[in-house]
Length: 355
Image (cartoon, rainbow, N blue to C red; front, side, top):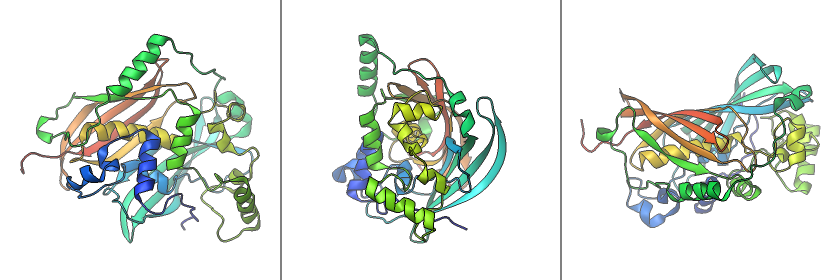
């Protein structure tokens, strides 16, 4: 049975696509420019692949009792086709799998895989499976040691600035199958240093669960949950929305973040997934298609951290439905040299001539 879902966006409007692209720092003209997009195979603007998260954040962890904290540790996304400007999208969500797990820091816990389907009319356009680990609140303080925001030297800041400005925003620079080989390097994108303004911009494009509201609306929503009102969201346990302080404040407030066992205020898992996809869409260009992306989140990314995201082509193969494809392995490494995120994406490559 599907849970009640409260969507952030219901339509891929000009504004919602632009706000999401700005929020993840992705300036591909296919998302942002009508005049450019009209000249592409789509004939108009489309949304970035991870725009799905702006429809519904895909956080699913039903039936979790009070005192349990949920942490996103990864996601697998499947893309059937891009969402076009003006299309209305609706989401349905389920708990697909539940298993016990033993964490090195968090002890015994439960991992839930929540599946969210995204549909235009009756057509399935994408599916997200977010992996959420549910740990006892007693372990919160044992998850990560507090860490102050990184203090950069002038040379370090200049390296970040140069990296951002050197980003190859692909647009029509298509990656053709005939010129792709195993071992090819996927150019880096640089994300950071993470700060409150970056989090605000991301939230403008893809806010979190139904509890992210002004205080008056939030109080009414909490009352609906308490009384079992039919419109109350059920994709997360009621305690998630009723908790004080609200767990989502950990993405902005250092005191709440550290009380939850994080080193400091931190990004969202969905945001990290979007950054990995941004690196891939830059590399593949607008005439290729991103078919899937599997992401593992290994370490927190806190305010002051910077991520360097890049990778290599690890496999080439022919798929019956999609033709020439490439598997790309990505990694995000922060300013401390710590690998925070890994991902594997599959891209259907454009071809210069038919086979």
